[in-house]
Length: 184
Image (tube, rainbow, N blue to C red; front, side):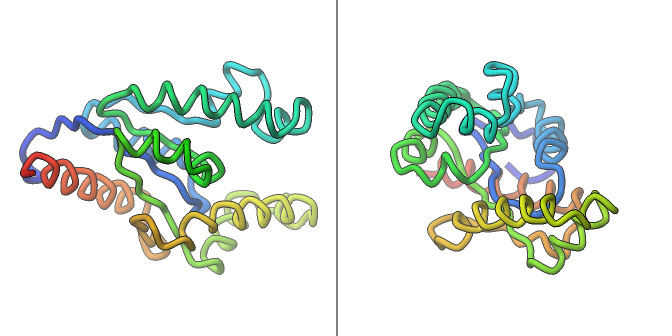
């Protein structure tokens, strides 16, 4: 299963973490490269619940949000060969993480803080100067850092990588793990 051979994965690839680039664009690029489906947990929540994760938490509480996330993660765990974008919060829940990792490989994206802030500033321009917006980004970054700081998972440092290079590294990671699984 070299890079030139067709690659048909069995297990899913979950991308989590935060590097201030579009996680959806990244999973779309990876999924297109292997003809796999792609799923984004945050998008699925918005489509089904008609609210963002934060709005769902504020409106119905943390317990309801956890139930929604558990239900969706159970569905995602039934997928095969999909690329999944997922925020850190559900993966920090032991039961959800274990269920997902039965059928998936997890790669956590990480970026040095100064580069992440630079990318956010470039993406959001004047909006990034609003202290409330910046505070929301920093809160999100702290949440996502909990996953990469745990040192339990494979981490890809994207500080010096373009989105294309990040996708290539993620594909190599996926291929390598699938090949290792087949050799067992």
